[in-house]
Image 1 (cartoon, rainbow, N blue to C red):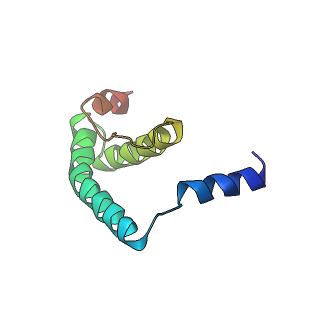
Image 2 (cartoon, one colour):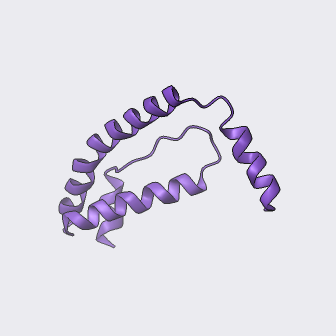
Image 3 (tube, rainbow, N blue to C red):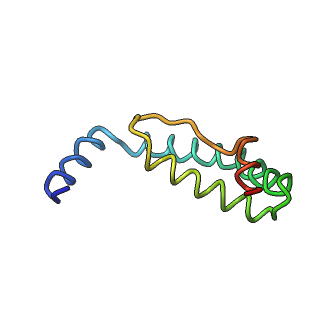
Length: 88
């Protein structure tokens, strides 16, 4: 993607994005992290791997889902199915 069109994409995406919206998004992200962290650790232990493996898997899954989605809103996080992925 040419640099000029990428800059235009970011400009269009963040038009109207204010500090107040950023603070709301930051609070939402911290809330989700507070819920997802113990869940990811538990799935790591439940699968027979280490708690750290559950955490790393949840982080990687979040990046992968974020990269593959085309929607402006996304809901993803550690789930019971992640235990099966950790076993492999």
